[in-house]
Amino acid sequence: MLTLFLTAMMPVLTGTAGCDRAASHAQTNLTPRTADVGGGTASTLRARIAPPHDETVETYRQSGAVNASAHALTEREWARVERAIAELPPLHRDVLERRLARLSFIDAPSSAGTALTRSYDGPDGGPLFDITLRADVLDTSLGEFLTAKESMLFTEDGSGYRVRFSAGDASALPYLLLHEATHVVDRTFGISTEMRPFSALWVDYRDLAAPHATGPMGVTVYRRGQPLPLAESPALYKALEASPFVSLYATASAGEDLAEVTAWSHLSRLHVPLTVEVLDAAGRAVVTVEPLKSPAVQARFAVADAVLARAAARPSRTSESAVR
Image (cartoon, rainbow, N blue to C red; front, side, top):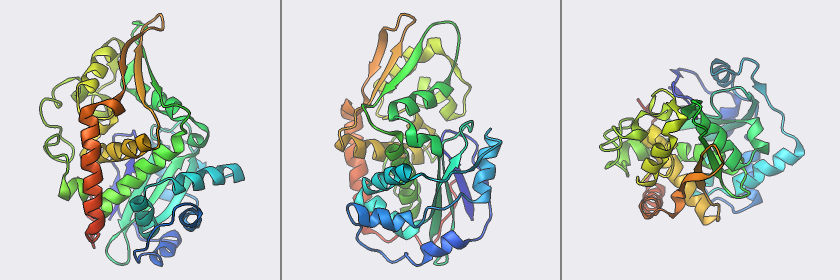
């Protein structure tokens, strides 16, 4: 079974495919091992970097990047990628060593999505994964990336409002790699579908529980709604501030919620800040949200840490089922 998840792109494409040469390389690394802190793990995973699978390229093209093509990393970019790998939590590095078949970068700046995780059955019955990232994120700050990504939620209405994210001097690459690596951890251990750590917020994998399902956060593009007028942005981010969600993208599904909570929990320990502002026509902040300082969000960080520790102590699933 092959499943494709393209970050920030709502349709999920499914199909079937076999393992190829990159997957075969990963088959020799399925034995659990202790991940190194620093260059050892990064060098191991560097060997998995390869051009994206043809189906992955086609998915990006279908999302709007008609000229999508494989990106060849420069030496400066290699260094950035290895540093981002080395900064991953130990569990993530360990699972990637055992389950990542391919890490790819693609030139697709007009794509509606940024990152894609492709999963399929490995030779032992467990899942293997390809992670593909848009190459332009290698030179994009995290604040710029999040600002551009969140703009897809709104339509210009003449109100003068705009939404701005700030994340200090952090780069987008470590966040994106951590987010996608969490999907690999999640799918390997069945966390969001079987352990369901945040079941109070989710009726099932895709349906939010009350009151979030019917409030402002329940009708965004991330929830398969239509773009909202920018005049509604103050109310939307006030709703986020009053909620236990670390981001609006976390409301897309239980899996995205886990990926966002896990990513921001780790980044907060690395002292990466996060501020969301809604600015009026004069540039004044009418709403300011700092999700990482929210007690409700911090409580969920602790839950995520605990559930990941439990997952690390249990065997990974021997077979992978597609999330519906």
